[in-house]
Image 1 (spheres, rainbow, N blue to C red):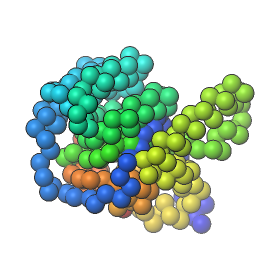
Image 2 (cartoon, rainbow, N blue to C red):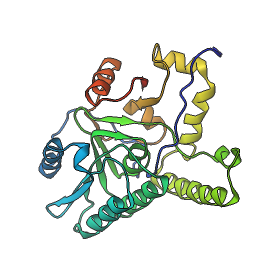
Image 3 (cartoon, rainbow, N blue to C red):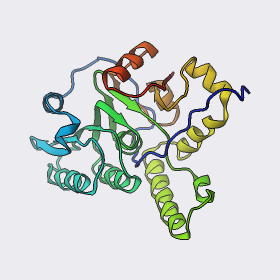
Amino acid sequence: MDNSRPYVRFVLVLFLVLPFHALATTQRGSSAPPKAVTACADWMATRSSADGAQVRRIGSSTLCADIPSLSEAAVEDFVRELSLLSGDTPPDIVIRSAGGRVDLGLTMGEALQRRRAAVYAYGFCGSSCANYVFLPAARRVILNDALLVFHGGLYRSMLTQAGLTEEGKAKMDAQLSRQHALLQKAGVEPAIFERMEALNHDGRQLSDKCGDVTPIRSIVFSAKELAAFGAGVDQDLGPQTTAEVEFLTRKYGIAQGTCYWH
């Protein structure tokens, strides 16, 4: 192992949800998104993070969630608006978010899982958005020029970290249990974040997969790699090459250090 290789230090992201399809067939550009999904994307294109979080319904079965950073108020809006959608068919949810607190992400994931929602990642879906909003969907779609970015998640050895109080340990243990239940129900490998954490100690694999990217701060997994975790992508319109990932990280102003893992 190349011990001089700067490891990808996965930062604890923020929440969790999971998929109901374990190994969906990936498609690229085979069909246009529903009109309401396109309307959501068009609306989001007029907004910036400075506009703050907003959740709105389009029609009776589509939810637009533009949430730069998860907050209690934004998640309450999300859960409430989701509950107001028609129960006749599984809803479509278009999400753009950089993530947020673990407990808030878990709440979103559990709400999604109950409704068997389809999730469409728009623009940037990172950290908790990737972990806990995208993964739990009954259908998963990465829209044009969208980046699905992972930093890692909760893993069992966190319970032994120095300085963790008994109260903190109990809270984390409860969140780990919720995460495991969501992933397991969705058909996603429950140890997915344990495996991501293990990459911090595997310099050779990082070199093979990420090449000259250093330091590695985050990873964009290809649809094939996500399927290996049980998180099949139904339609992938996002980046397909390292060059495309690099272009989009510049477009969205993301710090260097994102590896395309394929």
